[in-house]
Length: 499
Image 1: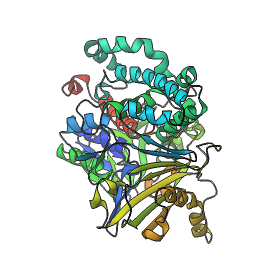
Image 2: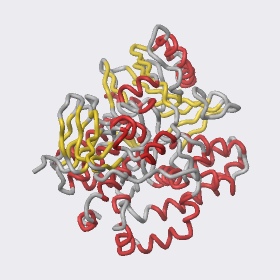
Image 3: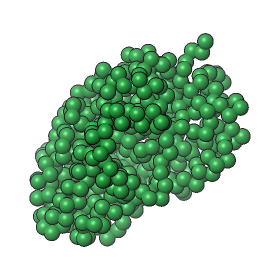
Image 4: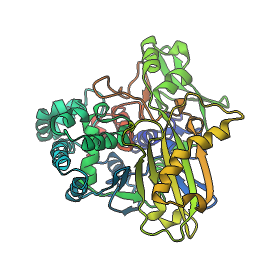
């Protein structure tokens, strides 16, 4: 008898959700993580008493029973929970012409927009109303009810027929882009740039490249649920998923890089680790990217040619420059936690260095830094091309981080003089620690140009989860990818017990 029924490669949120859900369903699951810290792009790390998020820090609905957030639904099934700190506004968008607070309350948010453009605020209201109709229709079918095979049909027809009827008139919007909805109602150029920015922060693409349900989810959760930050940072979410995995019998092995997915006669049979150890299982789930799965983890002769071509032709969003700082907090008054700085409104928001994201979680959770200090994470897009280790690496690293320092100076003017700890990450850092193709944010699959693939592959027994599978990029989306995969691997009668 085999020791494990499923092996998951990588402990990103998609992999952890799939593994923990399968364990909850009674499967014997092993997760192999190459890093010494679980969580993938969502992991947290510590330096000299400062606790940093490596990636996302915007969350809604983690503890709200009415939330549509897939993570919250997974926590319920795993019988896990996390402590959070609610706050509002979500953050501030800083443009050359002024700063916009992003309130959860829709009226307060639109009133703030009206200070920049009264007519634009009215157009934004129409745009958001259509998105909220879509959000309300979608939330009638919980993500934990979904799967990627024919068994989804009887589940939907038997349990969610009224919600399906609500969705029928919205099928065009579900398959379309946020940009198409924007074009119908929004003419104001300032609000169009704002919508592009909000989409970019979610998907890495502007409105015409972002599917409408993704922005509808964000607007709906932001205004109908609760904005909150996990006590202890994003790592608290990872810890809860690991607890859930282990509570239900799953195993997590850290510092365990997988070298190869083993395939025999077109069927996945297990994995070989970098240390030579072979572990067999009838199901292998890759939480690696589409590029890493098909070009690094599988031998060329094991990959169907069509799949290899798709992997190699899938465009990738740029990587990042990261800046993690520990600073002295003395004398800083009225600081808020999230900021987005657009340096030049006449330059495209997707240009590396022009749009900078900033998180200062110690505003909410002071325990993330030594007393009297703040922990800061700032990041901006940066192409992978042209980066290499060598004599000019440190010089280039500091030069390319200047847009982040300049963005921070708009929030804390004397930030450079306050620094007690500094760490700069590059696309090479991103690629190295996350074992991620070119350190990319994810696939640049624009709405209308293609679709994210589901969890199944052409290799029997091999499945994929994460941000290069359906439904795409972002925390809710990768959590949903794990749910879709786990549910597809078990009978619908089993998943029905948790609906």
